[in-house]
Structure formats: structure tokens, C-alpha cells
Image (cartoon, rainbow, N blue to C red; front, side, top):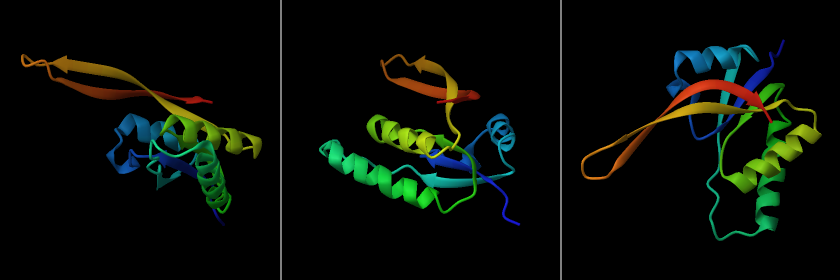
Length: 120
């Protein structure tokens, strides 16, 4: 029997997630599958974005999906969430606290601490 999956469509592989984020994902499905969010060149037009979204949505349709975590470039992210919701998939985003440190030379280091998943 095929078990539903939690699809992580982002550039943050689940094997690098903190325990709390993995546990939160497992409330949707026991198995997490990572699919890297594609790079979106800033020079492409909307037609290109929609073609990418259609191709990714077709690929996702091959899976038994419990939920899809979608985090990436904003216009493709929107196009994907729109398609996934229209197809009846539960789509979610991760929320975080940003913890920033500014060093004496003015450079900034930001760390993101997972808080929860939230439905789109």
C-alpha cells in the first residue's frame, strides 16, 4: 500500500530541518519527500513561469500527496499554490522567527527558527 507523502518543495532539504519541523511535517504524513524548488531566472516572463508551474504540477500528480510545503521564488510559488489548491491539494508554508546578529563591521547574519506550518 502506498502511503501519502508530505512533499517538501523548497530549497531547504528536510534532512537539515530541526526536530520540531520534522515532527510538524509528520503530523501531515509519515514520509517526507524533498523536491528542490527550481531556480527562476529573473529575466523570464510570465509564460515561462506558467510553463514551469504546469510541469511541476504534472510531476506532483504522480504522487499520493497528503500536503505540499511550497516555499520559493514568489511568482512561481504563487502559480504552483494556485494549481495545487485547484487540484485539491493541501498546500502549506513554513513560518519562522528571524534572529539577526549584526557584527562590528556592519555585516548581518540571520538565522531562521521554525515556528509552524500554515495553510495557504
